[in-house]
Image (tube, rainbow, N blue to C red; front, side, top):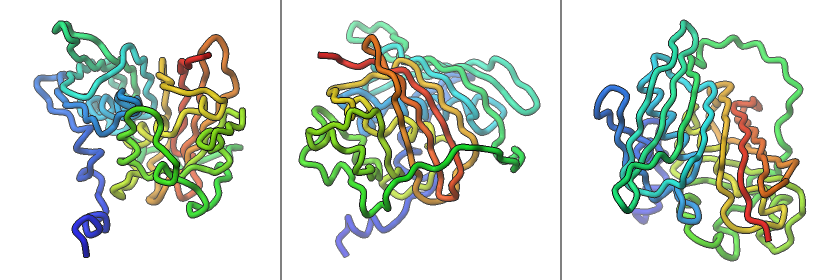
Length: 286
């Protein structure tokens, strides 16, 4: 068996995968962490916002007494670039079931000045301690079987610019949300896909922070092109996902003044709503 095929047959595990290595932070001092942001998670030459959210989420998970992100709100101040960065955390409050902290990621500009890239406020708890009671009217998205969906490798050409992140993902898009790739966008602000990590690592609460911001932007199906930078993103992790691929559904209802919202739902293989998010993003008009 060729070496590449043999490597692909070995599934990565939580704690020992490319995602874990690339989001790993090194504690320099209490509340201060170093990381080298990987170029493997870039799209159109900027570091993906979901990957950044997972990086700060990992640092907060080390700094706070509770293990799992319940809610995390991020403001993206300037575009992050691959390379060295520093994360600084602060514990805001610690309670019996929830702890709250904030974190910021910094890099240096060409003049050597420290620049804040992203700032988050988050509450952490223990997902395994939550009750099993679920009362919901939400339903999983209707996505065709994975074999009837299409990934970046099936397209005629990648999105303009760097799209290194697509090599790290298992992404199979619902054909009804792929009109933009054929030059025929539907005009509906919808994007749906099967989602996982390319090395087979199963989903966990931290990778859900990546999943909510890893699909192509809904702006593409609205007939717009180019980078759609996130201004603010709030993610809610609702429960620990079951093994197997995730289904992600993203909807935009309103584009106005050059900004749009994206509402995301992430469902696991047990038909449970495991994460939700809303973000405000800027689009290029004209």
